[in-house]
Image 1 (tube, rainbow, N blue to C red):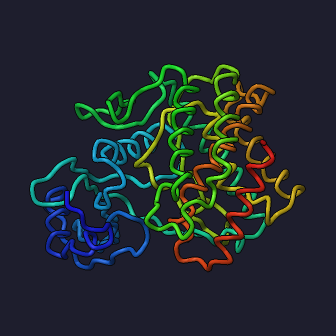
Image 2 (image 1 turned 90 degrees about the vertical axis):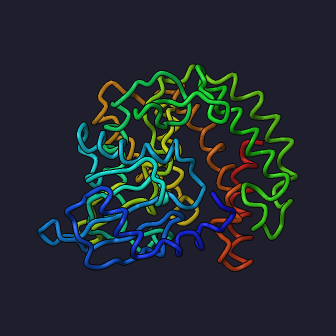
Image 3 (image 1 turned 120 degrees about the vertical axis):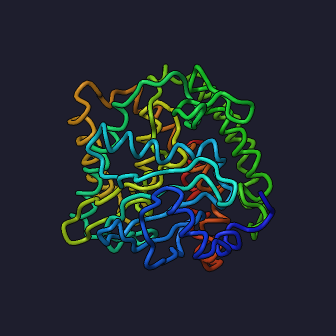
Length: 359
């Protein structure tokens, strides 16, 4: 690949290339219109096609370089698996290509689903709608976790054309999930000494550096001492409002998106991540936050009847919440690159206050 930015590479996918990619997957389909999406890092376009019946479909191609092809190739396969084995609302996949000599790959065609995206705007949704979305999230993640257990903890990718938990030098497996958690924490903490995961965007590269030694000491003691994690399974680590298509009137999830970067992890980790993304204690306050959290957890246990949020699981989730917060701190330069200095500082202060509760 080249050193071009994700945006410039995506913009250089011409209409002719789009039609060629569709033809490679569906030779009899004809593209009548192309609408490029301004969202996301990879190339996404909504296409009007004749199949011969007119319909809208979505073409997605990996162009940004943020996700390795060996992992990106898993997305259409995971969508197909989830569509076949669960009731989680996901787009149907019409075809995919892992590698191509002319076009950026992997790429695939999937069903277009109507719905609104509330990336960064969840506060516009009523509490009743958010309650419905939290309940559906609990049900959806419970069904996803039932697709396990998997062989080990790690990154889900494709080898020899099949979904697998990768075991490579870059993406090693872990037989004990605690080892992976601690290794990821070390990497995140190292990044926080110099601007996080996106140092080129950091306005203050040492914003959180003073916290690193004490947090590192805490996690090096705490993570290995955690109770034994559950068996790893498929985990959608980025289950957030920005990856949902929502019917705001009915208050229902129309589609769960972004299956390109799944982990094999214990369910408690995924649940802690989802709560981190879907709950907003700073804005909602403790009472409303607790209500939404219990809605989410009750839906999960009603779907996975053998599951219980017992004390060891809750204790591990408490550690995982800190891990999620550290990741958000490392991503702050990217997530808030267009925000005002005041908004970045406000969010940084929220992060700092959360972390200091553990110290």
